[in-house]
Length: 264
Image 1: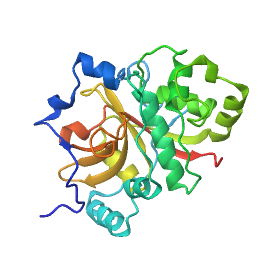
Image 2: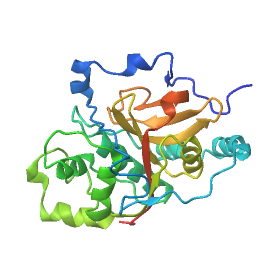
Image 3: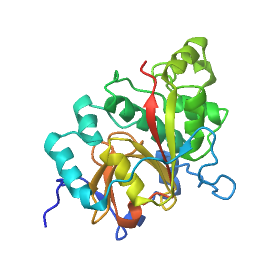
């Protein structure tokens, strides 16, 4: 049976080849990794005050292929919105801020889904302010907490991890883009991730095997389980900064998703 979604031209990362996509030490400093796995003993599901536990109805497995077909026919998935609005991949420039950049890209994609003004937002602001400008790793809900309480400025106002960008103008701008509804999600739940993507809810996924956090933007197929991701290693990585994760390599060890953001 032919795939519903044409993924020709996209690299598929799976159990057979995934090790070649894990950068060595030198490449890690070039690309930037930075994921620190969430400790679910200390911070169990539902324990985060800024993210309610996943509460949306799950899409039946019997409906999934039809929904994928509809997205493809109507060109209405988050991937199609990304292409329509010419939203490029972000660039963490070797810093260990993947956990911030994945969340910021999710907010940008949410804005596209909500038909809000398209603007490049700053992963630097979130990573730098959470870690006090240190080049340190984290997990995606840490950046979520900052955006919920602080907001999210444009890249233009905060284009790097420098204290000089922390200005009253930047803080006022950030406060207009707080995210007001989020979901904390069950680790390794394929059906939650699929249900989100089929509803055009961008999802941050933390992948322990990769030591990396990325933004999931499209369910490509259910069997095999394939998810299109938007990385933060510049548009030159993969295909325009994207690739396809397949099988166990697409199953997140931790994930969260924005549902509503302020309309600035």
